[in-house]
Image (tube, rainbow, N blue to C red; front, side, top):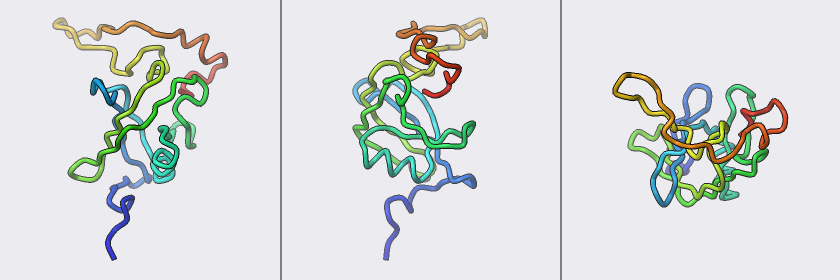
Length: 135
């Protein structure tokens, strides 16, 4: 009997696989996070992105505190089977610092990081406690 679809995903030694999250319409890269098998299964079952927090050691639903959710449009697996590309419809900002994308800084010609985006929400108001990393 052949592998199941999850059997084709190569999770690392910690049971995680990187997931690149992009806007389904514009293909802008919004963020990168990790999924374990349970997060991937929940993502596909609910149509909303779930991830595994390495720092907190637990599963989390994107937007559980902020309301800035991601509706899954499609999921792709790279040629090596070790990275996911998840295309989503983003509601609000993807970045817990208030930007639409976590990749809002660009390296300038003078080799300095420069913010090229603008904040679309105030993280202090959205994350009323000290749990700002709880996207």
